[in-house]
Length: 299
Image (cartoon, rainbow, N blue to C red):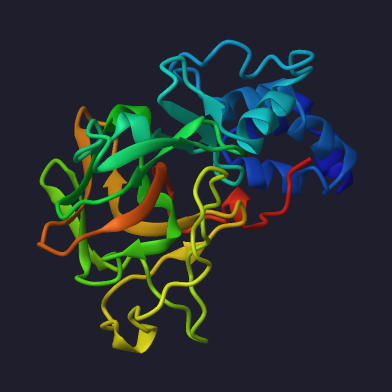
């Protein structure tokens, strides 16, 4: 350990800059010399991407600008920052520094979203976005989103997740089964999913969305139980923020080559569907401990 302490801080910083944010934080506990190097701007400037899209005014400023590159990274990885277009948000994965995005419902192509009889826009709180889209009465369920692959981190496997809630009076979302698809270049991933499924103990997986101007019944009778759903059908998961999410598929972003990522969820049978409340679609690295599920904070 004495030999390590005698190494120049610039050399330690150069080595740590080749690792990940999580590795740098672990190295800080090794010794004082490592901590000084691990907390240096030389290391954390390598973890902060230099080509992020323009952010909305005031998104990272706060009461004072971050005093260090590390604090700047923590601020950008602590919560999503709204982009200047107001339609997307971005944050960094705390373990790897990979870029993550959320496409708002307004940025998606949702069938019938301009017809108030079929869908409506409702206000939401606790999100980077101020509104979500609710399906009222549709048979043709189709949600599509697109994103430039250059905006994502290279050599990373990403997953796409629709973030939503299900109203207590929803119908037609448990059957027929929906289909999701993700494509990038010649690669394509498809899934069979069930937006509105039951948990193993018979409890409803979805969290009801409570709107002050709508009186909804607390329960929905005659819905499909989980044992009736085929084993190869994916079900949603509860998030810490009160929303649900459902994995739509995955893709590998190799060297950030120019390409368009196309994401979709469809179910176009004559079955009437209602009560799906869509906040947006998240695109984030797979197999990482994500901040929304209690990942230990880096400090």
